[in-house]
Length: 104
Image 1 (tube, rainbow, N blue to C red):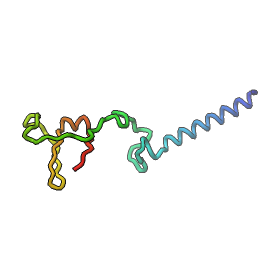
Image 2: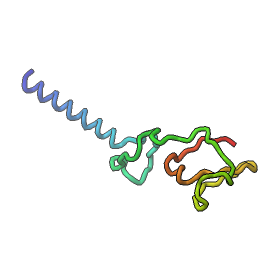
Image 3: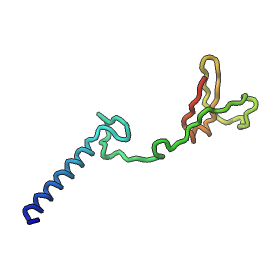
Image 4: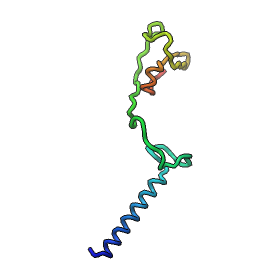
């Protein structure tokens, strides 16, 4: 390979890398989120927290009567009533799991 071919190959490589970088900086999605028109440039968005599916959900939760609950009387709960059925989800547990797959 002579100097002219090396120079040409280097230019092509640098142009290709620039185009790839430009495309990444102008990306319209990140981790499956649509970022078109976002107020923050995509290049400034950093990942953080647990990975995708890193927070375990509660599937098929088990319920007991309120009077039999072992939590302290001042424990906070998230209350939900659907079609006359009332359920309470303890905030202390929801802070960890964040998602409950439940049916009414």
